Length: 90
Image (cartoon, rainbow, N blue to C red; front, side, top):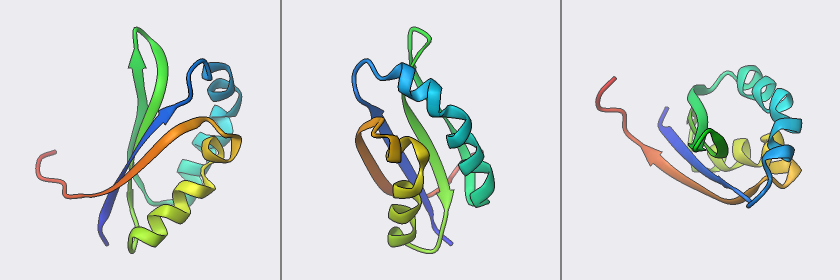
């Protein structure tokens, strides 16, 4: 299956919402079984977005996965970019 990178940018001043939804988000990442790596973007220690790499069948599956993320459902993101990604190193 192809890999897809989700590059998610938080809305400004939404760190409290991110923190309040974090446990549910992490449970989703673990429960779906398709996440190969994930983590937040930081600006001087403040979480400002996310990078999530998922292994799913196609772009439609990646879009569905992104829509089901509790962060997305809570309205945390200003923008989500989904790109097919090829792992070369690591």
